[in-house]
Image 1 (cartoon, rainbow, N blue to C red):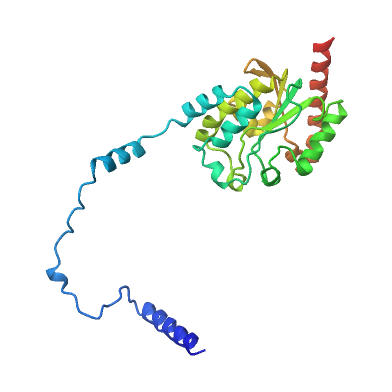
Image 2: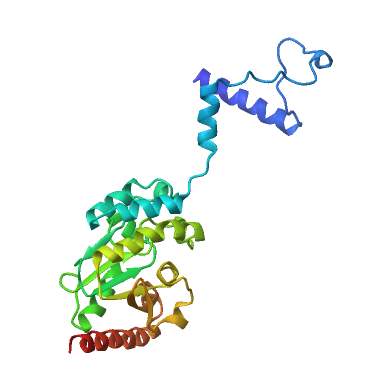
Length: 258
């Protein structure tokens, strides 16, 4: 009890001194500041080995080139997953719980690319989970598609963005080689990009309300931009546009098999 009272008394005294404007603690013995040297001596030069290490650390890493090399070397989806897990140049990895890679049926005719993972996807380590995932599954079922048989899904970025902020251009650039390789290995016939970040990562364009419903082409495949299920949950009036896009996809699939 006495030690606690002593602590409280000391803290009260310190707070009182701060209010009076004290900015520096006084030592037991006085210091003649006029006798102090004008400048401190320079530290001794680092050894040759230390200097070499410092120079190496100062060299900037070309993250895009590193990503291109790692992605190109991946010969399978499992190898690509491992390459992403080992990639240390993206700061998003440090703040994410899990790497979000893919779900569904690799090799399916349709591959859907969503925006960056949200909180639920980050926790689950899978794309399109929770209510947005349930809505996506219902949308696919309406035209006879499903993850279990005919659709493969992923996200434009493998790690969650802090506070769901927009990705920086450098983040998109360093992760785009992995996404392109992901598409190549999954080998879909058609790509569906859902949301602004997905459009930016694949097409280099933003403005999903303007782009949706209009076919484009990238990486040698037809691409159809669509609204993300998360947006549809918040704006039910947009569901009719999503339904029109689903019908367009369904018609395209039927024409290519007839």
